[in-house]
Length: 368
Image 1 (tube, rainbow, N blue to C red):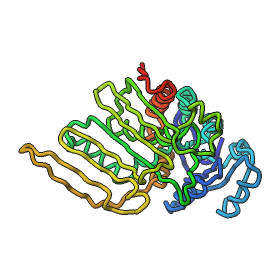
Image 2: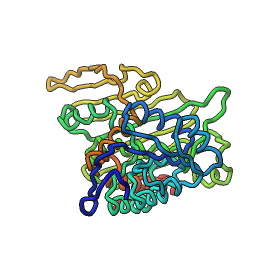
Image 3: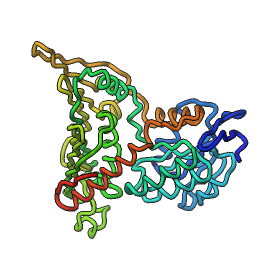
Image 4: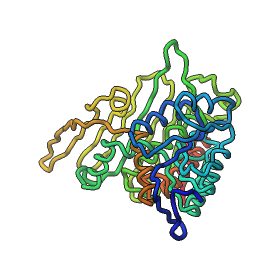
């Protein structure tokens, strides 16, 4: 048993004495090095210590550890999990490895922050969630945008009925081809799985976690991304342009369109539509341009006229905000993290259905 906490019955824990969170990072690729480590350290919490790094590729963990002042490095993540001082881990490995690593970490008594996409499918997500429930540890999925200040403002407006009844969320995103016409790479099953794992959760959050009843999707492979094997492209197993409609039991819906390396202008727009108003959020202006002028709110008044407002808000932190939440949940013995519970299962259920619909050329898939 780790010396910095004691157990108080099944599934409960309390930190005492040393309040330091000793964090291990599993997977030391670009996402971990460029996003997670800087975000954790930007918090400025002296009681959070990145104590160990692991990566299966020889030399990668050691190189990252030396560069970022991390005292321990391993090629086998199980050696990291065996460290008694480690009480929390962040999993930044490829998606197909997530479930087993997360389960092993939870069973080793570690709190877990799991990068998105969380798992390959709903079945894996249920296994991870079961392990989390059995362990009594904090488990969180890194749905980073949810805790940004602007997203929290949108949620308050929705809950306060400032838009009337919100019935649709629409997200459109496109990235352009890089200089010289070279296409950007895509991973996993393509843009539909890579990006939708975040955006489906956003829609569920804003709409109040309704139950999805049907999914309709269609995918295209149009931009000749040669990083994907020809056989997978020909078989329709990947996509670089995807469109989807998800319908919910309360009559609300989510429309999603995403293109990677497209012959189109770059954009990332979120529309939250109510019967009395609309929020239009330009994500690229927030993330890339660091602009506080990224939001438009349109309000329909009873006399029929519409007003437009432009709230100036400092766009909130992404990974850092989620890590602050993760650490707070650990210290406060709070397993009700904003992302990582039953909604994560629903997200994977939707993505599983989206795969089926896209493979069947847009057939509507009904959900139980």
